[in-house]
Image 1: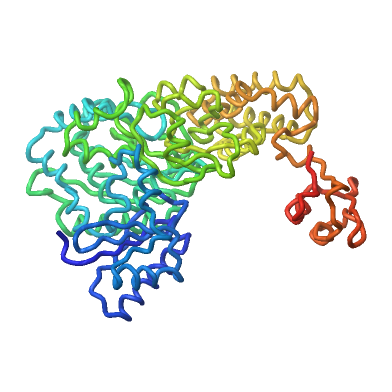
Image 2: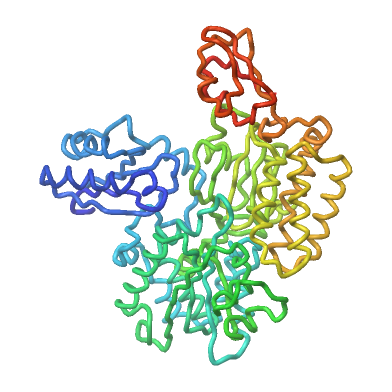
Length: 587
């Protein structure tokens, strides 16, 4: 039983963006004002990003209470009513909400996120931190560590799903005076924030995972390649490395053994292509981040032409738990070919957007409706984009697909690193394909012609479709280009860039046809295909729309029906937003 009451405030990027620091300060001021002996602590992301700032109160008896949407103005109520008065603040409590969100979750990679202070080594060690590396160094050979990871069934969580233990085994077999472990934290998918949240919430787990990987393959040096746009993650990782080094957990002769290991951080400039391992290696070496042909694979000739093993953040965060608890404990989750749990970033048209971790094999329907709480406003679920720009759209008709590597691939999408962007009836699938193609075209390194020019021509066709300027025969050309780019590109970026186009063509072809043949966007998203009019039966002549129109396209006297001049209208939608009586119609 803890000695006194503890208050924790979620201070990862999501919490801070919602005003978490101000909430923290407000709680601190109240505690100091009342002279209360209460421990105020920071923690990482608990996962319920949609209702930040989140505050947890843990009583001296160990009972936990979660509060959501705690603004600085609301913070004093927690102190006055709960801490002093002993009565929880009912209208801010998240107990039922949290129970629903976590009912189907299993937290392994996220086991400490939102639980410990990420800047406290003592907190991590209190949760069995660094016991896995101690067990490995004192009780296991490197080969036994690799076998344990193989037996767990853990597959790389960066996207491709290659067996982690097998990658370690390949790297170990090559003899060299120097080997490297690289942690790929170059998370670039739009809507993805899994790796950032893990580093911000539990950096020591990533460090310990790298140490175990280093011991297994015979490496003495590790590099974390993290995008510079993650400043908080970098700061907390730097502090964790310093704390581990000062405690003798990094450096020479760790825990009195012959194993030595050090970690360096490399800040990436945010190039999406550097998520590909050979491009990442080039960037680490100070070169332009461009992929190269394989073989040789990094396991044989990677960083500085030495054997190198590259794993992503989530993969490494799982490793200490697996080694400490045993492969069987991990393998009991998941399916026959896809073991364990998977972290996802739920974003888009979803009620409970945030960070989740579910057992692999869970139906997609359960993720969207039970964990994610369904679609806002009672709108219809249309699809989910999985795998980011390298993935594809899974339609509502496949909502009962199980979330595992094989099943997701059969839909035309990929598991990817874990981004899930939920789409509803107001989402235009052609526009979604255009968005992702624009992203990959911009991020192409330009090395191979299929990716450099193929994605550009595909984007041009998609733009013409969204503007109502395309012809029906261009759909066949778009599809042909997609297959050619997929087969001919040099690296994974180009190979998978057509996936959003191919899956939307497969499942939502009628929307493409409507854009081309009817010059209409069924979802009413594509601006060039919209027509704004005012319903004379509904308009009350309030003039709100006319005042909001930036180009003077709306005319009409006060308390008289207004009219939109179609020649002047730039289809900005300001009139629709301004109207309070739903008189503005969009077709």
